[in-house]
Length: 152
Image 1 (cartoon, rainbow, N blue to C red):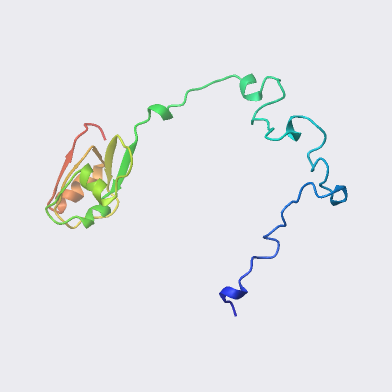
Image 2 (cartoon, rainbow, N blue to C red):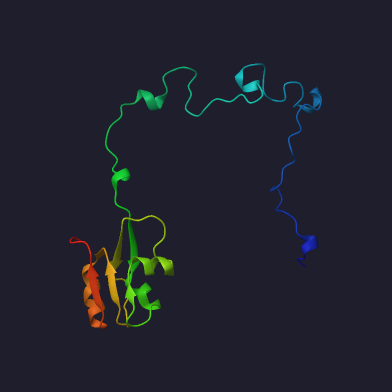
C-alpha cells in the first residue's frame, strides 16, 4: 500500500554527493578530480562558451550572410470567433474588452479575428484585421464588424 511514509524515489534517481578532498584513496583527494594546475583547476576558473584558446572562434571565422526580419515583424494577436461567445448579446467588443477577458495578452501591434467556430449572438466587433469568413458569420448572427486596417 502506498502511503506518505512509504514513498521513495525510483532506483537510481538519487546519487550520493561527490565528496572532494577526503584522502587520496577516495579517488577524489589532493586535486579533487581537477587535474594539475591551469585555469580550470582554479577557484572560479572557467572558460566562456565559444572560447577556443585564443584561436579565432568558429562563429567569427564563418561569413555572416542573410537577413533576419524578426526584429521588424508585426506582432499580431489572434482571436477566434468562437471565443466571442462569452460576451453578452449586443456588447461592443474592442481590443480593451478582449484584454479584460484574457484573449489578448502582452504587447501586440494589432488584433486579428479568425473565423474558427460560429457565433450565435449579435455583437459589435471592432478589430484591426479580420479573415474573409468572419464578416459573413457576424452579420448572419445580426452583429456588425468594423475593420480598422485596410488590408487583411
